[in-house]
Amino acid sequence: MLAGLLFAIDDAEDRPGRLTATLPFAGVTLIEYQARLLMAAGAAQIIVVVARLTPELLGAIARIGQRGVVVDAVRSAAETVEKLHPLSRLVMLADGLVANEATVAALAQEGGDALLVVPEVDAQAGLERVGGQMAWAGVARLDPKRVAEVAALPRDYDLQSTLLRMAAQARATHVLVPGEAIRAGHGVVRDGRMLDERSRAVLAALVSGRRSGFDRWLLAPIARIALPRLVARGVGSAVVGGAGGALGVAGCAAILMGAPVAGLLLTLIGCLGLGLGRTLSDLRDEAGQPRLMDGAMAAIPAAAVLALGWMLREARADDVPLLLAVALVVSGGLAARAVVERVRRRWWAVPAAYLPVLLLPALLGLPVFGLVLACGYAVASLASAIETLRTQA
Image (tube, rainbow, N blue to C red; front, side, top):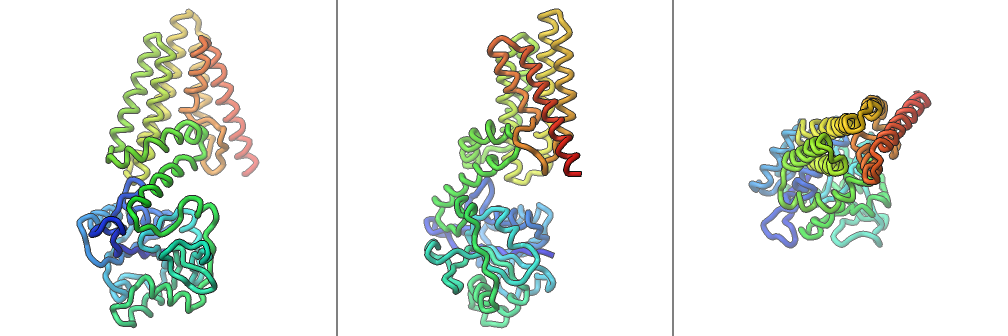
């Protein structure tokens, strides 16, 4: 079993009386973000070492517990030993650590004691030295007996620092921080303003790293600007997603009323709003909402395509546009089912990606050509996905 050890002891350097662990970060508090990293690595238990239980910390611990993991708050090494299973693997994150999932997951694998390190010459001020001209970078994999060893010492020993020393004396393996993690802002931060900057970088990376072309090329640039502002103002994901859904429905209605350009544009904006709402839901671990918004992001483009086909059929007295719309919905639906996330290519279509393909020809007065183009995109995505899956089978 994997267990995580977190710390909520130090105050923020620029906000006396406020724990660094409870500062806002990526839509939640920093300690909730750290807990999410541990849970993504497979942690079934999280132990939080505290000096005092503030209302903000109590709320954060309660929210972590709602995510299906056992959470215990302790004040000493002895209490930690009582809570920790002796056969578990323990991953310790430093108080104030900002990291990414890949970095934490790498230290959560099977093995003996290991410390994530950075060369002393590149280390930021305040990082603890661990020998070999290295400084600790905030993540450690520890044998649970290290905690028992600290518990045998006088109570006034600092648990985090002493565990680090015990691991170093036991010749823990040194693992260098990956360069991409450093570029993404990996580090121990206790300044609220700097944490805000790192938070914006994490929010941007969250959508930029998605493999869908629609997410990366359309949603990500908007999210980099909008998400930090939405998070700072505490705007709910349901509000953002609901507004996006309403715009999408309004766009479908506009198409049926004979305004395909305005309707497709509204539908596209609505899907972008749903994408922002889904991202906020992911950040806050809101059960059910991401799936609901994903469903809306599939249903609204399909409705817009059928509305466009029906409107063109009525305007032209020709069944071809409607047949093309039905073919697009069917082929697009099959492509969406065939496209498996683990083998996704960035150019493969997702339902919302057909909207800009339809919008550009509509702006030129060629909506039927847009339907033909979108059908070709769907068929190409489906064929490529099937071939990739066949090759990997």
